[in-house]
Length: 290
Image (cartoon, rainbow, N blue to C red):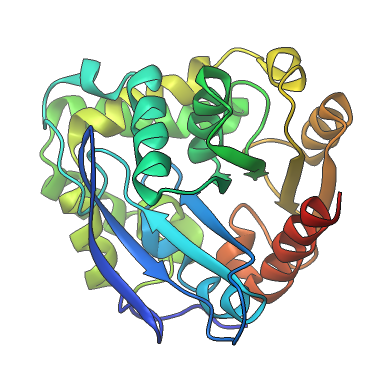
């Protein structure tokens, strides 16, 4: 399936600010387009340099399976506000509390989904309080710090942000080569102008703080395994952020359902949205039957 060339919400979805006890967060919210009861609500947390639009191709297939999808921009990401130069506002515990507030604002227990960095933030939220959640799916999100090669990439980005404006950093990223080769913030579901706007909307302090988190995150799998929730570890068949063997081992330690999406890399939600949506809905359906 080709990548969606627009940030426009999919048919039947609406974009709005979700009001919570910790402020407003930009969301794209879609309800099932089928008759009958809503099977459940999914809250989706994006990764490093990402946004709610990263889940844009999941809304329709998950809606067809009876699930409401709420994808969110975290604090300081794209269309959610946050301080530009205060890294303490983006401590992982603060971002985890934001997720708990988002879940509370939705008013029902939710299936929590976190992609990459978003998975580690989601994990932190579950470890603070698992009661708002029906399940946790970690999408291309590993047990601890990212791989050596990715730590080097994040360090380069953090060094650039320490001395250059967001605009200048974007120009430097574009000068490095085609988006499909450079990756990172220059590659995604939108066109280059939309990706540029997302980059410029993201707060530098958010990137600096969360980049550090990705490079220093401890292994908290044993803590998570003690939480009484169903777990799902989903990834593409190729990933250089956390090797597949590492994700396989984490799934075994969590006694988690494991899905490997063929033809996908670090973002199966964008690379192969239909099999990704099918795997998510199948997992959620299994928790209803349990």
